[in-house]
Image (cartoon, rainbow, N blue to C red; front, side, top):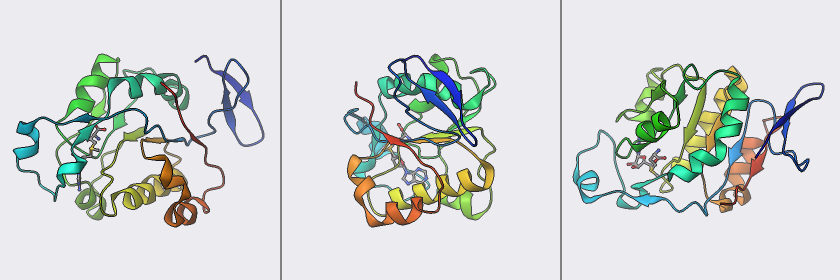
Length: 190
Ligand SMILES: C[S@@+](CC[C@H](N)C(=O)[O-])C[C@H]1O[C@@H](n2cnc3c(N)ncnc32)[C@H](O)[C@@H]1O
């Protein structure tokens, strides 16, 4: 996908070669559940975590999903990949760091820490862009959305979140995004 920049009064819109606007200003919420996640190995599943885990959450994002958003990642940051600091707060076995380093990002924050404790203690690391695939069990999707939208509003931080399409039809999603002036959701087809 080639991106061109188009400026409007408030927004900078990336436009694909065929003229389709795909995202806007500092935010992009991606839904691409067709990107089949990779089940973690037995060693990962059995290890202790500093947070409550659910076996069905132990799936990792495939490399192709990151490759698909590379042009947008470069676009939202305006920095080189070496300078662009990216953060994935939800940890399975650390694959995010390895994959992003292979794609040229050397400033990658992804540690086995309790994300919610970090939020409560105001210890979320400084970063330019959040990229994640949250657990889909319990209230994780809502908590993740609440965090990224707050960060967008307060700090203008861009985010890329991989979630199932059905989230866009949920009441909690509508309530959370209605406070955001502009939010673009998209499906990316492999
Ligand atoms: C769907 S996986 C995605 C892992 C990784 N973000 C990726 O995209 O490949 C979500 C992971 O978040 C972990 N998790 C659950 N609660 C967490 C918490 N409070 N803090 C950090 N990670 C958590 C789960 O154990 C699970 O392995």
